Length: 154
Image 1: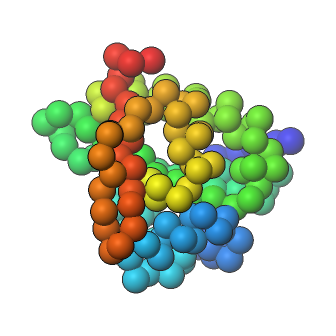
Image 2 (image 1 turned 45 degrees about the vertical axis):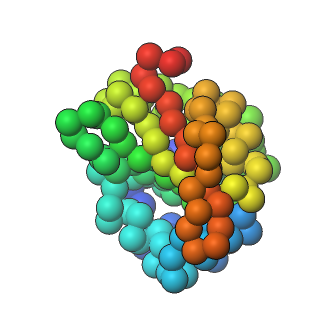
């Protein structure tokens, strides 16, 4: 398995959108009126850093991070992916832990929200060491779990 990271290309965005995991599609629909392609481009444009994860040259996920507060060093990580991240989960877990560590060198706090229905993403975030706020955020009739990780916590 050859894993590479690249700057997102238009064909990466289209491929990930066309093959997006259902849980990620559901989250996109719950957060906005954007379709998966538009949601990916919006997230890319709002991010300070963004990457496509490719497994053997095929896009598996696009992820990034955007600064929330320069003053506090808080940033919001995000990711939308295809089922390939589950098929090649060992490789994906190693990669995600490495990126977590790299991001925590740049930002003191990583914080965002995840669709409460997305059990796989919540389990992954827990594995990465994120903690969850006690009370969910409600948006457009859906619950979202706010997750956070501080540099001193790992």
